[in-house]
Image (cartoon, rainbow, N blue to C red; front, side, top):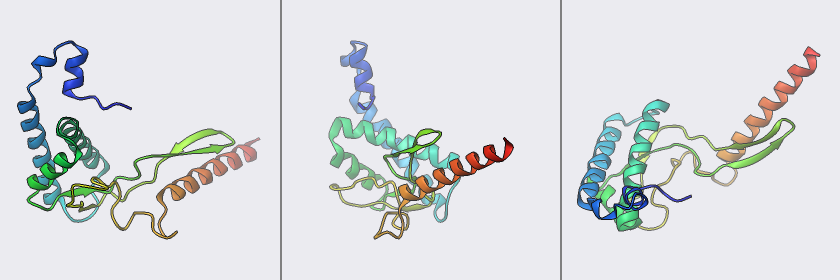
Length: 168
């Protein structure tokens, strides 16, 4: 899926020359800075889903626009700079999902995050923006968010089928 940015919007409308890249960069930096300040203020412990969603969407939008314009490494360096060398992130769950076929249909499940705030990597290569904190990342069979989400779905489906069978 292609990311939708101010530049792609302008190109679509035939107004590429009207994109103010300096203004967009300043806006992205302001958003990233505000999100990082809020995350630093909220630390420690899990936060509400609504707050997590607002912060994640805002920062992903800003980082995506910078990455599209300057590259992923430059966007990460900007995030590190704006967070005073200590960028923070929210444990929000797995990025991709898994299809699960059940008797009631096919569902896509995503591993859930704990919504805790954690320190993000301070390198500009590799996995730049992790979605899971160190405690929630898959490790040698101990923590498997996708497998756990699949099991929860299968239990819910089984419970629903048993309830239907007893009603009949």
